[in-house]
Length: 202
Image (cartoon, rainbow, N blue to C red):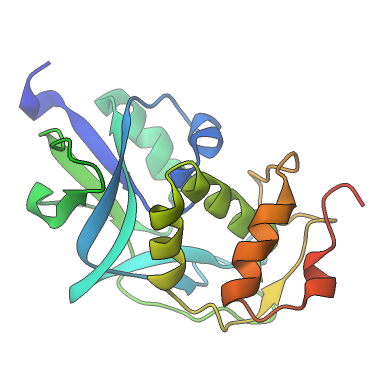
């Protein structure tokens, strides 16, 4: 396959999770990356599920992290459908750097971004059913990756809901072990240990 025909999407939220990606379509290899000139926020993208999502906005000098996902051109429409409310734009590969020594592949790189941020509200809070999926995906990429996600995501002080008993996120993963996720959430979110103790099984 030529470089021109290789396509990649940047995942910086739930697409970091391999299980979550597989619920939408077929993807290829994944590389953990740092993304320059984009800032990640918690934001209300739609009120459909009563929850907020993460979104990136272009911002010079900012950076966040994510994964570079190889994808066939035929799969792009199903991921466009998943990312409704975001704008898909091509970015230069020079904005990406690898966590590993290995060079990143060449091809067409797409990112789903927003132009505006709407802070989470009590009606559309940060939900644990969604945050759990992202953080579990981050843990697949190692401790440094997790730390960067927590540090380079704005808006953790926003309203947050433990919805594990009644998940609002449609691609929830109730099989997740919440103990390590709770430790991460406690370090950044406005939530008590008692609230975090509620799991998918209890």
